Image (cartoon, rainbow, N blue to C red; front, side, top):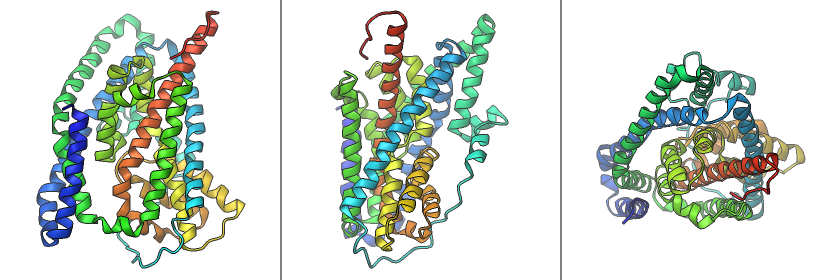
Length: 412
């Protein structure tokens, strides 16, 4: 049995165990969750996060040393951002369109609004852009700020290229960090089935399946929207003459881990490993595009924000006007690029979308309980969309190189 199958099996067992615990032994949920399930799940997430920073930082610098100058880095960035905006806009339209057609918020009643969700206002765009520049690269590494780590790695990579031969000892040191971190990750992944089991058991035991029944149309809508976006990604691969079956098989471990942990950051090192070793994406593109996409590219978040905003308008019977739809669309798209890759983060950033659209913030509590159950699917959409955009960049670069050399464009 390979690791991805083992993880999915553990996830299924976790659902069954959590359901039994919730329905048969409700009086024991608190003590079992607090002393066994939650600590095991949290420990596994911390183990995965232990190797995220060294793998991302070292792989970025290694990839940048293979990129020819700052001009090529800039070209990669412009192409990726163009691709991100287009595909995220499509994801947003899918989420809003599904919510509009399915009307999951119509007739939703009987929910008590909780005050446990603390929401904070998102910083302005200018403030956010300035915050991407780290004052201290070591601080960026210690806090795990992915965007600041990417910024630091890009500038260090440019410095390595300018230093030429004098930078060889540093490059060898970074390569050692990468290979050591990769081997450490392979050891940590042995704990993945247990960690995923604990995380899923904890979620089902504490939330229960009755919440899914109450919000059935809401969950169904998110599943439909996510499926449509995943189908779109597969069509893109077909158009690029890539093999969707090989792609999905190559990323099976990362997909299983993403669904179980509901964290793009936790799945990042496995995605990076799978897409290079199993799928065969070029290292200089994978090591740059995958970390950048993990920090910025969130198709799942775009779907969720647009879907949730229309869900709220339906609950409160707010008429949809062109100005309201524009506010929802623009704020949802911008927020999707700044949503952290950790479980539950979309609920916090949802406050920005609701505020921009003039919708009540207390509506966040209506979907708070169900979010952890649907969060895994959203994370799968995130990592697949990110990986497909990396393949788009590879195809784009291959075509451009062929045109420059006067040869027929190669298919990636």
